[in-house]
Length: 163
Image 1 (cartoon, rainbow, N blue to C red):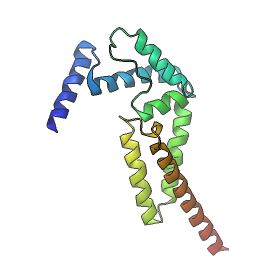
Image 2 (cartoon, one colour):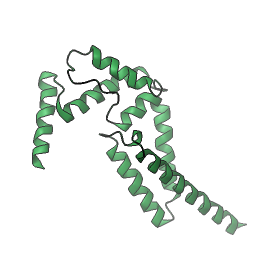
Image 3 (cartoon, helix red, strand yellow):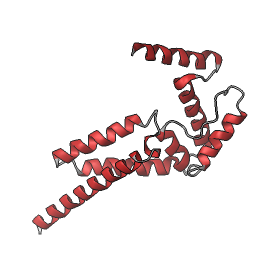
């Protein structure tokens, strides 16, 4: 497994020294670089879904330093969401998950389950397009909805006990 870190180091070194984007890590660095360029031009509302990926493909075609095949996604769910929906859309998504987990804090089993599901999704999504892949995206949506139902039922139960 150590070889993978050596390869990643060498690919990163090529990016920094030669502006050459090759291999898995080099391409992910490239996609994030292009993603930040797209994001800074569409900061608050993004470009919209699909348009962000069209812009990514156009930038790949025009970039002389990019000589891999044309890819239609950022390989990062965070970058995809930021470029598509901007800071406002990304914040709404992120805050909805944080608020949901906060509302489950007094139910230890579901609190820790929700933390596990959403933290693993959060960290995995930096170098992966997890939410774009079916049926994984449906699984995460179902988890979100189930946790919302649990939090809602718990809130209703507490309100009925108070009255």
